Length: 67
Image 1 (cartoon, rainbow, N blue to C red):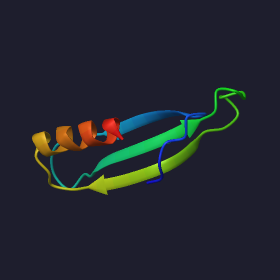
Image 2 (image 1 turned 135 degrees about the vertical axis):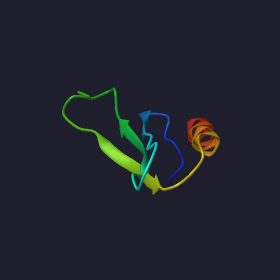
Image 3 (image 1 turned 90 degrees about the vertical axis):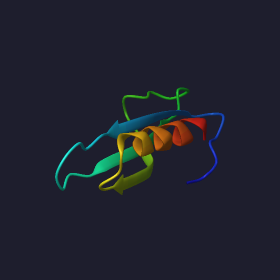
Image 4 (image 1 turned 30 degrees about the vertical axis):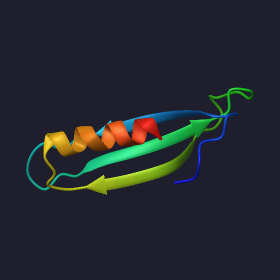
């Protein structure tokens, strides 16, 4: 993942898997508020993981939020 740029706003999205073979997916998207944010959105980071405890998922969310 690249360093955040001050001209952009970033959004963290998480789809948390609970049971079975589903995967938890983390995404970070960016958009530039100086332009029309409805016209484009860029996914700058995506990660999927399986079979992790809820506390591990929470820790990863905190880590990504801090970045």
